[in-house]
Image (cartoon, rainbow, N blue to C red):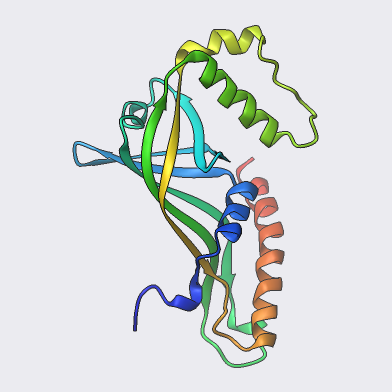
Length: 195
């Protein structure tokens, strides 16, 4: 059997972009001196590239430049699927939506371009314009010297959508409903536990 199972792979770029736009917090992974560097930060997809920024003191900042290789993971909904929800006899499983990307990172060099990336990020994350970041905001101007911007040219796209596609239609629908239900419940349970 080939791995990963083809039935759980989604090569539709529009589907992967939907995940990136709905769940923009990415896990960015790179390697320096045989050590994995991992940062979680929002990225936006613009002009065919991923664009982001991070604190200049983050050790990963110096790696996200000069066409260095990088792996990025976007994580969508996920949950345990109990056999009790199915109409047919099944084993337990875990369903999830992930997008794995590989590419090369280059630095965004000028303060104006970094500022524009911050403006673009805020506009994307504020679709209702509840807050508008202004280009001449003095707080942003003071923050800019501490920010490194970067963009990632994507060379490989992989959608990992394990959603019980190998079940019959009724069980597949039940698993889909369970994923949506658990997604809503899990954040409330977690926040009640940790806050």
